[in-house]
Amino acid sequence: MCRLAQLLSSTRRRARLARLLAVGQLRSWDLSPCATERAEQTVAELAANTALHGHVHSRDFRLGLTSDPVVGLLRSTASGARGGCLPTPPAECTMPLDAESGRGPFLVAALADRWGVEPYPPGGKTVWADCDCEGPDPSAS
Image 1 (cartoon, rainbow, N blue to C red):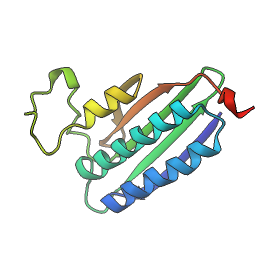
Image 2 (cartoon, rainbow, N blue to C red):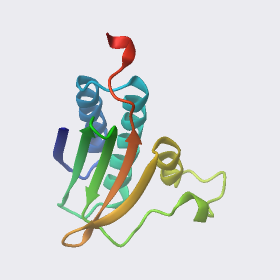
Image 3 (cartoon, one colour):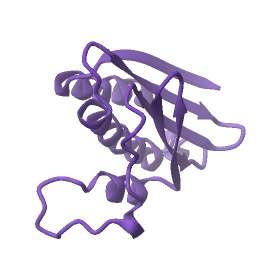
């Protein structure tokens, strides 16, 4: 099993850094390009949303990646200090089509095989997204 856990300040700049760290880590693991690309985009969305919506002054957010090749699962997580504002599932979203924001749950739902939210004690939340992966890239051999 491969893991990455990184604590970052809750700013847009650090959300970008979270994406860059994830890209570097994911590309070092022996995963299919499809799973890697989906996870890169998912991390970018989770980190940006956590820095924007999960931000509490002077509190950091946590980025997590876990690859379990035995079960073929890649999990991305972003944990923030604000727990009250839960993401709206895409099926329940009534956002206007021309809105400038609010598409995060749509993107995560489109990229991930499963996603959800769980409490992050003492008062925050973790948004997670799973990508099923078929294992190492067969073209790498």
